[in-house]
Structure formats: C-alpha cells, structure tokens
Image 1 (cartoon, rainbow, N blue to C red):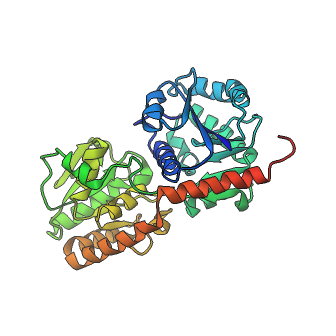
Image 2: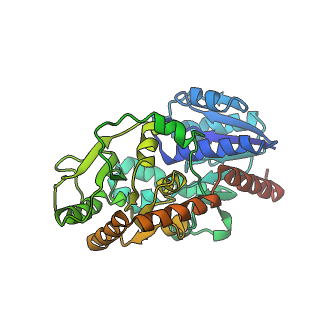
Image 3: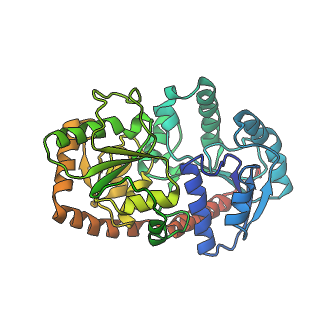
Length: 376
C-alpha cells in the first residue's frame, strides 16, 4: 500500500494533541515495521520535525506555512489533491480533523474530539466557521473516521448524521516521543518546588476546570487537611484569569509556567499524585502518563476519563468543589490508597501502546481498500 499521511496542519510544539497522535502513530508504525510505503506531506515548519524523527519515510515538503490557516486550507483543498494524484496514493490519512474533499483515492480522517463544538464560542468566528464547515465535510466524505475514545466517538455521532460503524477508536498511549521517565527525570531543574507536592496541568480552557481545583485545594489548606503543595504546570493565571472562581487565593500554589517535555515529565514523576479535574476530554493523556510514571491519579468522572483511567483512579464530580476537596483529602492523606492506585495504574497502562494503535490503524487502511469503490 502507498499511504499518504496529511500533516499540513502540524506546527511542532504548538498543536498539542494532534502532534502527539502523529508522533505516536508514526513511531508505532516504525516499531511494528509496517511494510506499506508511507509518504509524509508536511508544511514548511514541520519539515525538519518529519525528516529528523522519521527518516525511514519519504517526506514531501509543501510550499505553505501551517500557521497561516486560510492559505493552508486553500492549498489543502485546491492544490494538494493534484499532489495526491501525482504520488499515486492508494489512501490518504489526514491526522488533523480536516481532509481534502476531492481526491483521487479513498480518505481516512482523524478527529480527536468535538471541542470546537463544545467550546466554539471561545474561538474567533472565522475559525469556528472554518472548522464547522471542513470537519463536517471531512467526516461525511471520508471512508472512515478515526478517533481516540468511545466518548469522542459518541460525540461525533451526536453532532453529525453518520453511522457509528464508520468510526474507529484507536486509543493513545504514553510517551509518544520515546523518551524514558528516568532520562526525563534527570533533566528537571525547577528548584522552587517543595516536597511533598501534587501536580496538575493548568490551562485557561474552561473544560480543564482548574479554578474549581484551586478552590477545593484552598478549602483543605485552610482546614490544615492537606500537606502537599499544589504545583500547576502550564498556563499561569493572573488575578483576573479565573473562570467561574470565587477566590483569587493562591496560597500554597506554585505556578511553574510552561516547561520543556523533559522537565514536565520529571515534575510529574516526583509528585505524590496527579489531580486532573477536566470535565471534557477526548482522551486525557496526562492520566496515562502519570500511571506509567508510577504516580497515583485522582480525576474527574466526566468525558473520556473513566474509560481511560479504568479502575486505577480515584474519581470525583468535576462540578462539585466539595467532592473534589473530599477526594483530594482522601488521596493526600493515605499512603495505602496511593500505593494501591499506583499498582492499579501500572496494570491499566498495559491496555495502551502505540504499537496497538498502529496495528489497529493499519486494519482501518486494509478495510477501506478492501471495500474500495469503483469510483476510484
């Protein structure tokens, strides 16, 4: 098979989950030594990323900037189909929600979640309009849709009039970059952190639910019921940066800002536990990263998180500050509970690997090509 991988969207270090999926899938395909010919179509910013990480595969650098969405969309829809034809692809897999609508081969599109539907009001109207149009067309015209959880599958079905049979779930896995936790731990240089501590990943996105986590933490701290410092990795909140928050009290909270992947993983590995309060996640990769690093997890019972965490996390209602506080108190005060969750976490992560993801994706390709329509 000659398989094209559409990475025209990819901006290394910027696009987050879609880069994780691309890196993990391609690493998995290399690990299982997939016999198909893979051709990576990239923009100018991701040319070095592709050639450095995946020299085994042919890379085609397209004359566009991924950061210029209007021009990228134009190229993807108008110019790119001719390139697909020139390379005589058997199938094109677009990994970033959007796929060219008129190409000479069957297409598969990856849609991680429906965030742009759930929280579209936070986007510019231009971006929201573009995503609604192009993603809608892509999921209807593609032969298969790949997503990352049963939760996301149901979200796609809910928003689009398509059969669930058209959607295939391929879970994510930990450490898409292939680095070991030990190597990452040595790279940590964040001296302000005091032990013991717990960690959470901070974001201004409302679904990450960080303000309620802080409120719950402060309830416990005022009562002297938690000894761990709360370390927020990522976005720093200003005094006016809280959504749905009744307090700006940051006592006992350390904000590290954004860290390198090595430092971030090292900070995670040293934590007593990870708190993950998000009420909407397509997958929730930090949960798996924490479990693989031997870090107990307390997290929301919403979105994909029960599916991903299995029986290896302590769950709370993400909309109840009191319930978040109760579960934080429970995990922070019990070494026995943390040891039990650590053991269960190690077992849970065995369900996920990029090799499994790669094999399942290859099955999707083979299924599509075996049912290839005469119009191709």
